Image (tube, rainbow, N blue to C red):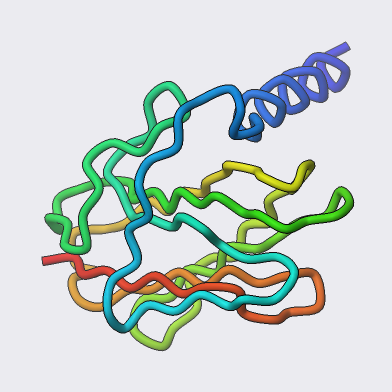
Length: 146
């Protein structure tokens, strides 16, 4: 019974997290100099680093965040998918890979996000890369914890 309830909770959370763009207004594009976007079939039209997600919208969008923040979010709108697929958010602190999060993409315009818990001593340069299933880098977003 516990396994069934856990599976149900995971399915409900997954459906809530990965809601198509049509359900919510899209935040403006926020890619800065030094960030990149690939123009292949699947691409990132919006990729931001933020302090929170509320009502499927990024809150506290910034390229520099305080080091006392406990969780950082990477919000992305993926476009161009022709079938159900997935992308991965790969989180780096400097050149050290800290996390890989697989995210489903279920329409040609799909909003999704991942998060990374951070410690106060992890100050400095960070980046998140978006990878397609064939490991092509679709976009990179850099940010700084001060």
